[in-house]
Length: 304
Ligand code: ATP
Ligand code: ZN
Image 1 (cartoon, rainbow, N blue to C red):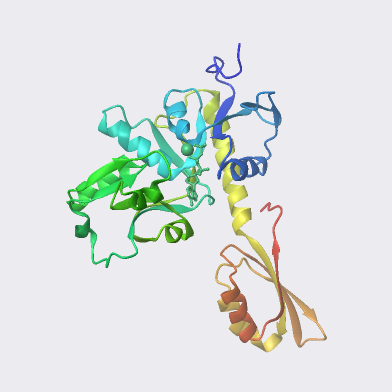
Image 2 (tube, rainbow, N blue to C red):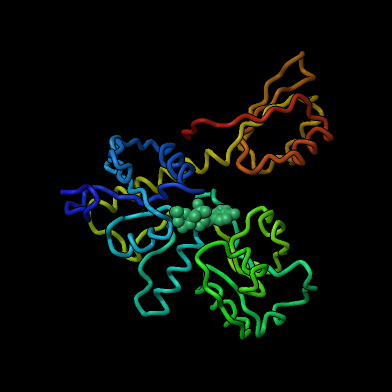
């Protein structure tokens, strides 16, 4: 039997991830950080789970919702944009809901946005009435237009949406934006966000009623731990003892810090596990409040 045929025994979990593209490596890295390892097949489409009975299927991201819906895969890592578009299509044609978002994964961040030529003076969305809008996300765009009560023409393109206005195919576009540099390079500006997206773990609409339920729970638990570690950093600094009451309130997301005495009783060294983002701004704030020798270290493991 080919390893890609639907699994007959339901004691292994099959997870679809993007074969190549923006989500491919981060998805593998995240699953590997959950303790998963695989043996790759020669065609590089299927990876057999070695450390746990969790296999990977490497596919195009657009195929992932359908593979889950058809039961070919049990779970998938895919952009919320792709999942929501397919979910809407299923609801519109009466076949959905067939899958659901189980867990946002903190990478692949972008937004689905409306963009118009830079030369437009933008007031509000009513300016789109009667215009042609190019997109690869016809369901999400049509729903947003309907909800906003705007009658515009949706022009479906499968790629290179951003050049449609220059080619005269459309007046505006609705596309994925992250930095905005692609839009700027095409003399377009974002004017309205339709959906905030990131990579998510997706699964079928109904719960598993066999051994896969336990495997999925294990994977979700490990993902939760791995994502918490990614967000956590160890912050170390020194400060005069009398500044402690000023500095500690600046660390509301820190677990009880370890305080060590150095240089007699007057100087302290602190180390704290922080669960929020330690931005430059926060570090500068701590420095202004009297902290010195600030150091931020990644956390490799965490066992409470
Ligand atoms: P495939 O060959 O698998 O169909 P693709 O070209 O459709 O690949 P990518 O460009 O690799 O897909 O994007 C995959 C996902 O990455 C998107 O669906 C989206 O969720 C996310 N993403 C993050 N930033 C961006 C961006 N700036 N443009 C497009 N997608 C982005
Ligand atoms: Zn794709």
